Image (cartoon, rainbow, N blue to C red):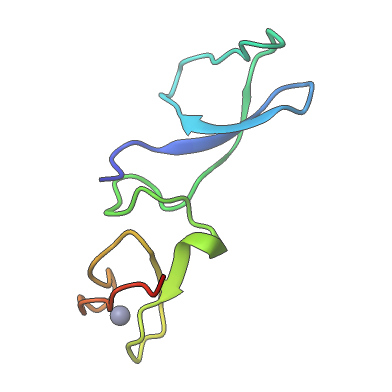
Length: 89
Ligand SMILES: [Zn+2]
């Protein structure tokens, strides 16, 4: 379950990572020694039933009349509650 919030972070050297972060904690790049700066939160915001970042490759249409995008790791649509069909390989 997505109970932890992930953030997109960047160093001065433009190295970018997506990782779980706690507010008030400083994160340093192990390789360059630069401090990471939070540049954005990754959707879905915690807590969310999905662990996947909100990205096109992780989403599909639920198929109901609401035509909402649903993360692929869910079994049920989080908008209408409908059971989602199995993903074609
Ligand atoms: Zn739906």
